[in-house]
Each structure stands twice: as structure tokens, then as C-alpha cells.
Image (cartoon, rainbow, N blue to C red):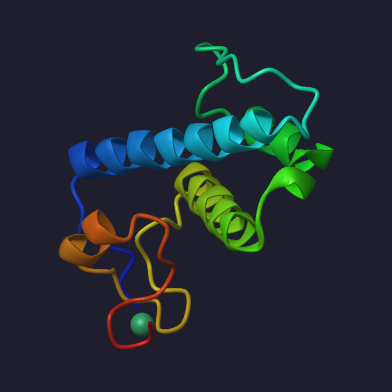
Length: 116
Ligand SMILES: [Zn+2]
């Protein structure tokens, strides 16, 4: 089974940043509703670190998300975790590299076009 990823390291970096931006938008959406005590300030040194993802997950802040946002949030966190562990860009179902065109449209996807 191939472990090749169809996206370039540059694209992966680009998608990583895109996912973090989505995460930030969701965080802002929660704090705007006033249901989270945590301010939306971004600690630049922590961005992209797994510890930050874990910290977010352990917070009650997801309670302030709407149902659809919560699903999106989980998918984004999952994608960031897969970037950290190196499995990002590989279809979770058939283990084939997901085409970059698909990843660029759906950065948080975990399956290829056929399985998705
Ligand atoms: Zn697949």
C-alpha cells in the first residue's frame, strides 16, 4: 500500500494554515455569542501545536457552537491531528492518497473522492 501523499509540502503547509484559520473563525464565533469565557486571542507560538488542539478539545467552548459548527470543528481538529501524525492526505477508507484538488476544496476531508 502506498504511503505517498499527492499534495506537496507547500500545499500541505497552505492547508494547515487554512485549517487553523477555520479553527480561529469558529473560536471567534463562540466568543461572539458570549458563551465562552476564553478570549479569542491567538498565541502565535502555540498555533499548530498539538497541545493547542488538545487544550481546545478539553474546553467547554464547543458547547457554544451550533450543531453544524461543532461538526466542522471536530473535522478541522481531526485534520490538524492527522497533519501532526503524518496521516493527512491519505484516505481513511482505502488508504490511497487523496487528490490535491479535493484537499484544496475540502481541507478537512478524510476520504478520497470515491470513498467520500
Ligand atoms: Zn478512498
